[in-house]
Image (cartoon, rainbow, N blue to C red; front, side):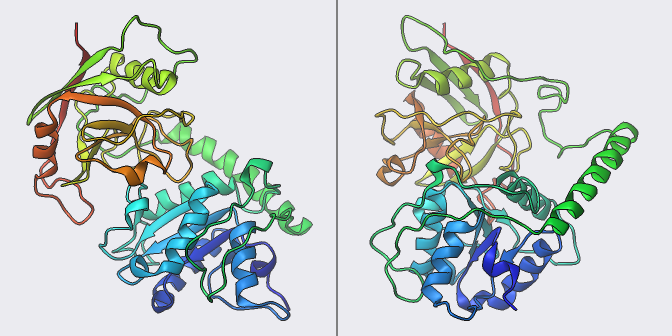
Length: 383
């Protein structure tokens, strides 16, 4: 019998073959959540390996790329990750303390280095939330939109040696019985969740900014860009010194307006630089301090001609180009590889690049998080 995973792969796993035994528990854990998962590379009768790979990438709604010591060197895994990134359905996972390939370095990976199937960790729950954001809910019918058409990836073959080709996704339709089961479970979850919400207030990871970023702080992105005669300048005060940046309000009106709105709301005051990589970037703007937090909303990607020059200030995001919110990073050197990766540069340091480099050089852990927090004291408009 042909398994559902061959026909309706909601989740497609990309990993190095040597990591098969390490990937199996994760695939099973996600399968138990109700999603169809294709990970074991089994080929149904009448299909070739290349056909299954191409169909899996085209039809899946989420591609989990497992970064390990072996996979970061695999051209096949990198090619599959590139396809997933272009289709806005990439969710990276890290099972070894490694640095992903450069083109994926800015996409936050779920840290499952110490994860075990019998332990429900915050990182695993965040992974589940990221998957649910792409798939919506297990078993819901979807039709791939026109703007999610597969795009050809050139230069590297997919696993098996064949050149990648385009293929139009098919409609994904689960069985009626399975659909009804999820509807019933979903309704029950809403009722039970509502009761629990009333009894136990929602919790979030502790941060050094609780007095500033409150649970009751309702934030909404600007619907219209701010209008000013000239690009405003902002001062970023840190424990290592101050930086001054020009905000590209004219070149990136909505992205810059969103950042200025958050500055005026004092959103960034007291947050940390949660990711520092010498010779690359420093990243901040996450109220949770984990790399997974934000303002509670997302903004659309904005195109401009600004480049990642030394001191460029740009929005960090997940695999979806329209997933930026409040997290931003400062480039420590010219990064042309990011210019073609749809990261919106919305500002430029005028002074203080040496301060950014000083922050990048603090001692950090395997996830590039400073061992001793380095805070953004405040960000404000220069008069």
